[in-house]
Structures are given as C-alpha cells and as structure tokens.
Amino acid sequence: LILGVMVFQEMLVTSGAITSMSVIFKTLSMDSRLIIFFFPFFIGLLTGITLSYVAITFPIIMPLILAAHTPLYYLSFAFIGGYIGVLLSPVHLCYVVTCAFYGTEITSVYKYLLKAVPYLILAAILVSLL
Image (cartoon, rainbow, N blue to C red; front, side, top):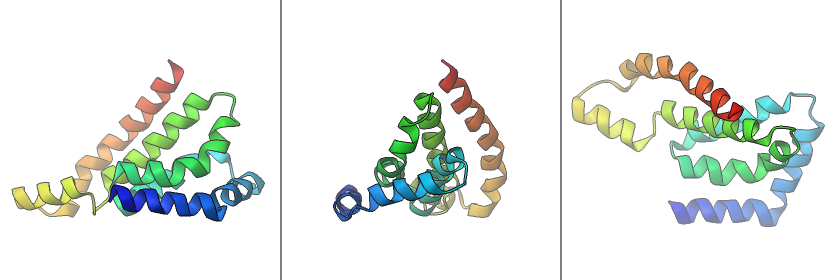
C-alpha cells in the first residue's frame, strides 16, 4: 500500500500534475480554504487511509497553504479535512473490521461519527490559534 501511494505520488510529480493543479487552483474563483479542506477530505473518503490523503493531496495544495498569511491554520484544516474523510470512509479497514466483529451495520454507526465531526473542526481551529 505504501509503495503504491509513493509510486502514485511520484507519477504526479514527474508528470507535472502537481504544478498544473496548483496553477489551476490559483486561477479558480473558488475560495482556497474550500480547496484546502475538501481535496484531502475526498481523497480520505475514497481511500480510508491517512497516508494516502497526505501523500496524494499535500504536494498539490502545499503552494496554496504556503501562500497564506497563517500557514499553520491552513495546514491543520487540510489535515483535519482529510482525517474527517478517513473517519467517514466506508472502506476504512478499522471501521469495517470493528463493525464485523461487533455484528453491527456500518450505516448505523454514522450517527455517532457525524456527532464528532464539528468537534474535530473546532479542534483544528483551536490548534491553529496556538
């Protein structure tokens, strides 16, 4: 898995996709905070693995983060966005195995997970203010 993520990341670097994506993101009229939060969120949701969303998205969004006046704020928001995606991912291995072990439906646990999401966002804001 780690090897696959690293190979994919290297493909993004050598193809120039990271540079191109950064330029595209800068030219969009979309707020960069939305890109910084939701891009890792969607990759985390798709993969269910923290290493994947960090390795795939951070090289792409890092120019947006570094261009900000408070990069720690944006970095924590990107990380927490990806972490929320992993937390809510139905393919997250710990989530699947735990539900199978306890004999519960995956969808029935979401009502508890969704209650944690606002606290995670609040934690990202508080950490960025330190």
